[in-house]
Image (cartoon, rainbow, N blue to C red; front, side, top):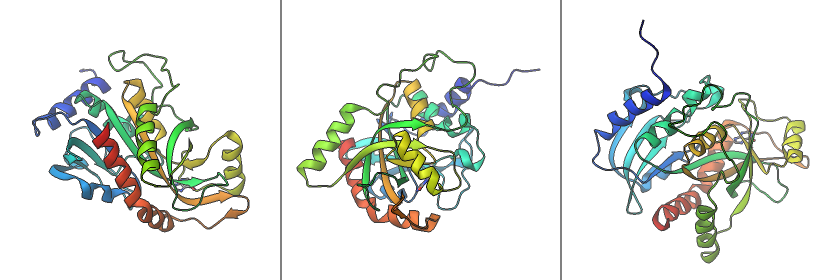
Length: 276
Ligand code: HPA
């Protein structure tokens, strides 16, 4: 009986498949979150491939999430964008959720941008705010690095003192300030979903130190940091969950709010890629 291929071998295989289709190594990988897919409009596309045509890739299902990798140019640099991501709540395990990051690293990519929609629990936040993610709290029930560690990716015990690159944050912060773009900063707390939070849970998130809560991002960032990739994270506050102001949140409202703030996210991500 042949042994099952390791995550390392599978991701290398996929990386080689993709690398055969382009003649460059992208500098950035960019994950386009819920409602932020139109970031892809700024990309001069060389090549787009649906997830189901990529060997070893899981396939995305949830409504509002398209599934393809886009290779092309943004702000004069070569990038690859994930149009749609894999969420734990969809039923994927954490190795599947984070497989694309393994592939990106195998391709030689060392910079990752993650975007998402989230619920704000900081009283100073309002719907439509754009929040730079300065740190996160991992409350997912499964850890993407659980199990045997492959030292070729990174160490068993990963230092998480700087999950989000201070240098990248500074570049975007400076640009936003100089151009009068209002941004917030805060801590993203990751929960599995798929339910939005109860009022008691939003209160818990706040008390635990979160500024925003969402159902993605944390696993991808952990795996990227395992491989020492530099990470920038940005979140659109699509609903508010504070005691004074909990409203009825649903997927459509989330997509609508994300769409309204999309131009700002697009500009900030494009500038980061240009300047760093
Ligand atoms: N909670 C969790 N995930 C989310 C939310 C929320 O309020 N808004 C957008 N994604």
